[in-house]
Image (tube, rainbow, N blue to C red):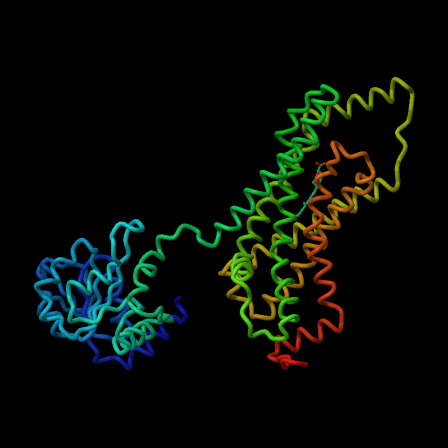
Length: 434
Ligand code: HEM
């Protein structure tokens, strides 16, 4: 994690003006690392197979053969691919007692039986290999110092046995998105099948009517908003559960169960996916007035009124209801977009902790409340209509999780609960036996 500006790194680097760091490898990575080290006040020496033809190296650095370069510094960064580590075997005596920093990653997981760093230790047994894990605490300390003067926060990940996991880190494919994606796919599949059964299969079986055309817009515009609402609620459910757990434990210092931890960690991804589904719902809603089916129904109805010489009575309650549910939907969607924007690192980094919490927690719950109210008003009296094959309308199912979350939050907001949880979060602990 880059935690400081390069200028800061440069200022701190003045302390290291005399220290020399060696880099084996004059490729892109080696050059960038060397430039940053020079900017931070280190002397940089490159070790190369072909020093005369090593071009484009940063100004101020030196380049020499591997053996000579190794003699110049205690810390040596290895900026070459694992396939080329062979050149280190004859250098082993020169590398005795040196700190070898392996910065390599592989292109695929599991292609080698051991991590690159462990392989390196086998090739050069006399050197201390560090990846910011390593078996020598002194060697790790040296590398942590360099990383800090380059403006990075180094994290010690333990012994060299952790190397394989560290090397695989850049190869992970959206690890935090896996659970939210799985939830979204499961919810979409369930909702789609549910509304397909109610709106298409039921009609076909009981009345012989072919409603299959509704799959494209109507059913999609039922499944997507339901998934959006449920996933939005799922972002806030773990926080509410964590509050109750802290009340039950009487402390904030006991670890949450692993499943709750994992759930809390992917709330942002859950929220962004929910926002994507809400976007789809809004887009599908925009095309409702131009749908062939909708225009057909309006024309037939208007013609029937003309034929019967009847008038279309203005229904004040319906007008209120429609306007209210649209308004709740629009306000909810507006706040939802704001939540999405403020969860982006470039925006959230510009907010202080209180501002971020206000938006993500207070406005987040308000968003959930508005979207739930939107769905309630949309449903209105639909729940009174006879169920099809005992299946209630889909919107009713979508309200279960949001209502649970809002009720839990309401309970946590009651003065006695709120007082207790605030004390716990400030560090108070219940004495056992009381
Ligand atoms: C239903 C409009 C935002 C959740 C509907 C329907 C409309 C609508 C017209 C009825 C669809 C139909 O007849 O099939 C809007 C507008 C929005 C908005 C204009 C904002 C610009 C949202 C948001 C959520 C949401 C942000 C949730 C996160 C729902 C749900 C239903 C629904 C769950 C019921 C779906 C069903 O079972 O048929 N909305 N909506 N809406 N909307 Fe929205």
